[in-house]
Image 1: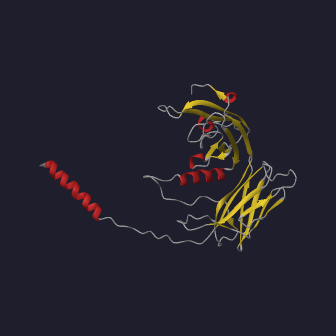
Image 2: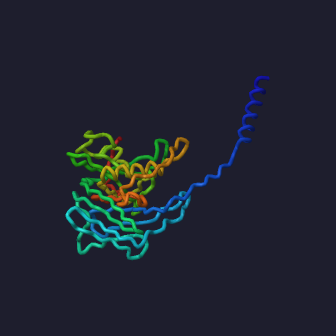
Image 3: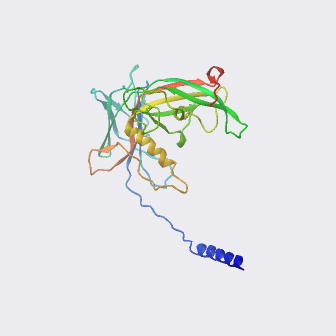
Length: 300
């Protein structure tokens, strides 16, 4: 008898919960359109590009509208100015070098200035140092302990430059395809994790960072792997970590979304705000193939 009574209470509870279901049609107010800046400049030869777009409504999944007819310049602390133009009128503002000139120089600071729709925006950053990538090796592994699928796990070897706290971003490509999933936003402090001040300074990058340059599946023989090691500032480090947190923020324990940090500042405190980030990076890269010469036999 007690069993039937418990069943009755359970069914009554289910009916009550279903009867209380209310459909909520959330209406989000559309705020003012803002300028969005996507600008990463490097010390690599060749043209440099800054992309300007306009923000859209929260649920608008269409391609962002280009911000055209802006005046874009970058200047460094030596007094040199680099004009950026939008030749295709598509929001991609380009600086073209002459001969073998490069824009980025390690140790210099750079200021971005954008004049757009009566507003003037500025951002400043420094191009920090970055170590070379010594080598990339591969170790044969199973996809999981219970899997029959085998392949090769990559590891990059680089040594942090001693004497100061350095911040890095790591990118990698497989057969020419950039691996750009949220999990592939890789950042490091001194070749280790954030907060380990002086623990990894001047040492070889720790194993989790070395092994971060792997896709969801293992590499195959003859795959071509390119790894880039980029210097960033502490502010740039915070931006990339916040971006990864926001785009992976889901599931049962998701937290409310927040605006990403930005260093794009309107010179008029009462003017329209902007989004995005301006970064300068020194870049060192290495490209290798999964061949016998680069494969190592290890137990770990």
